[in-house]
Image (cartoon, rainbow, N blue to C red; front, side, top):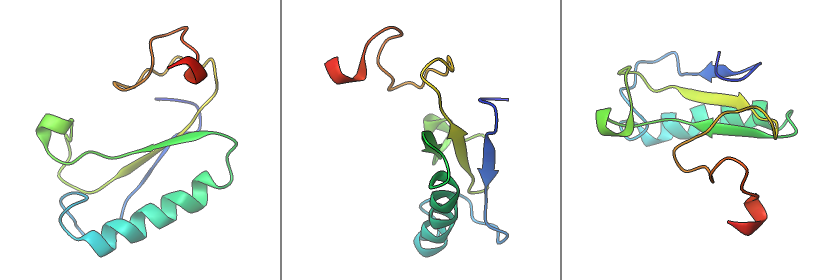
Length: 87
């Protein structure tokens, strides 16, 4: 588990990645956005292509509920202990 309560949002129709069918990708993001609206803090993430860490050839978005102390470090996160308002 990435963070407690995390889930995947994906379309029923096969779509290789977020760039393959932009309208379907946007609808999938809209579904993820509805879930995020219920959370106090969250990250939404997807990847396109192996260099961007896509390991499954089907569009999927991660909805990751977040807490200040959840320990999840994303590649673009400030260093642990840094305050977002100082980065």
